[in-house]
Length: 501
Image 1 (spheres, one colour):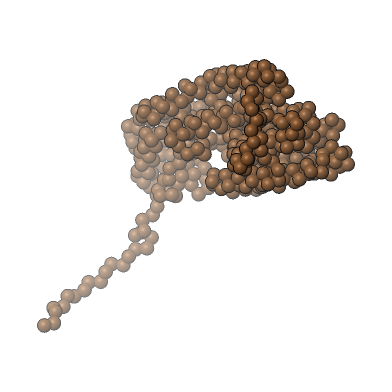
Image 2 (tube, helix red, strand yellow):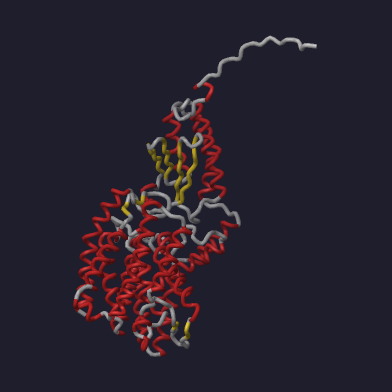
């Protein structure tokens, strides 16, 4: 037990020491999340927290695995699993880091996840046996590789999708790691227990800087790495303790919130006929914010649900038949209660109304305003006065803000509730002005999470009026006609001669 505690403490100290370093590197490399769009924070936040988590875990794991004390706990054959975890985890961290720095297409990220899962399978992390409570166990046989890949990729994306509020994903991973540690320790699976103690410590050290108000985000590098480690360690139990196989229901229940959120997202996007990887704001944490619950309280609510699920997963692992059944019923009640509490079914009904072309409130406000825009802008006499009219449009149409960017200079015209942007997600859309010389961005709080086609058309009409009146006042942004830049010389008169017979 002393080794586990030492791993936890060392990883926590390393995480708290390396996270500020990762934060400074984030700003130096430009890996920051800027306000606006789907980001709910009000200032630029570093997003390379995964670098601190990975470095803290790596330093602690390598140090502890190389000590004489840990070598007495971990069998030599388990070192192969440790190598596979580090190789696959490094691949997953690298994919996430590249995405944080340069941005990757979703398909390429999926390829990286499959590669990391295949590496883990090759080193011995395999779904060879499925042992479900109250049901018989069965061997997977030839399905071992695809099931392993599906499991690891699914958990990685579940952790990534729930990373939407300050401290949310890190806290859920921390509780899940503690649960896996307890189960592994009581069953004598020393390798998993040591890895989970180290992971919990590294996440806790990072959480000091990530809890609301966050000073750094874990980014994809952190969520991908954490999801990978949780996924592979949850299927390492049966390999290390064949006489008392860890039920696959234990990690399923412990990670119940991110898993159910991922499944709901897939169903929601399928019903809406949208790509499964397209972003939206229908996640559990978004629904809590839409109910008026503060950022911190929403995180604490999900923490509480996660703790209840973790306790139930421990009961499933060690309880008798009736206790396992009672725990499963309790888990079902908790998850159904959470879904009902956030009004998820009402949310799907609202989306259905949108598909039936029922207008949103912002469409109605802008539709009534659009006829007043030409008269309001025609009163403006100068370039700056015309742009100031955007502030009037933002207020009257109940928009959060209208931003105009030209040559690297940003001007923001805020609506009445712009300061509330830090508490809610916003929807935004960009329009080019005068070709692509100027970029205009409209942002507003949307109950739908995307841009309705009616809103897109109305905003384009606003852009057309803005261009027309900027031309009228002879704005410096109006492109100079090519004829005035390089006048073409007038053609010389030519004398026509009669054709020769």
